[in-house]
Length: 316
Image (spheres, rainbow, N blue to C red):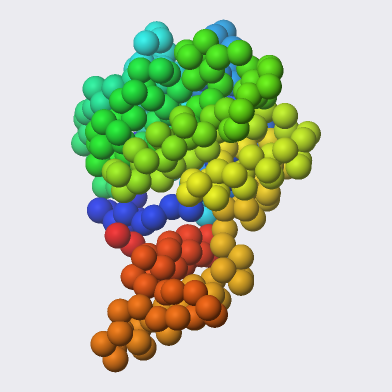
């Protein structure tokens, strides 16, 4: 019987700068992932597993979750889609076997709030049956045209939901886009091909108060390309990015964490503003620029991300 969680009813914000995909069918790759330094590792029962390997991969995933030393890494499993014959048993076998050693389930191809609700109900039943006192979180992928249309509804569908993920690969197919293997347009296109879809996912996440994670970058040997893609997502406001190779992890961890200069400037701006506020002044000039309440929100965002990256963010 899986052991009970040590911290009942405590939800701590999770850093998600890097989310590393790992085939659940490979013991060797699971072991390597545990020491990757990723904020979150998900053992993948879906796309990374051939149909003939999916059922056996559940046991490998459970063993990896319970036996390996994951340190501070968030432990997750991506199950197969709700429209497949594997999803139901994926959830039951992994949760029953791993228990408190599982932090998050990732649900692919969410099309509506009902999809998330179904998983939520099943998890509630399992947690009650197993006596688990810490709820398992959820992340869902927005990677179908229907899911993109319903992104805001999906993002608000469950109190378990911690993040939504922009899935460019399957979304390309769902939209019938003409893209290459790296999900880039095969012809000249004016501007950022995925900007609108990214902002839809990001806006849905922020409206629901949860995290937004950017799509994978399949060309794992293109280090500069991955950094560029991660930087663009970070500038928009995404909290992190998928990694399909351990070499991408340190890049994501760096890009999605505020620099020392950004943190220092945020502290200084808040200090000056609070001092002026105490004197009855609502906006001040600093280095030739206006600083007002909106800038304080930006500074708070920087400091929150810094606290997550350092592991010092307080519990909710």
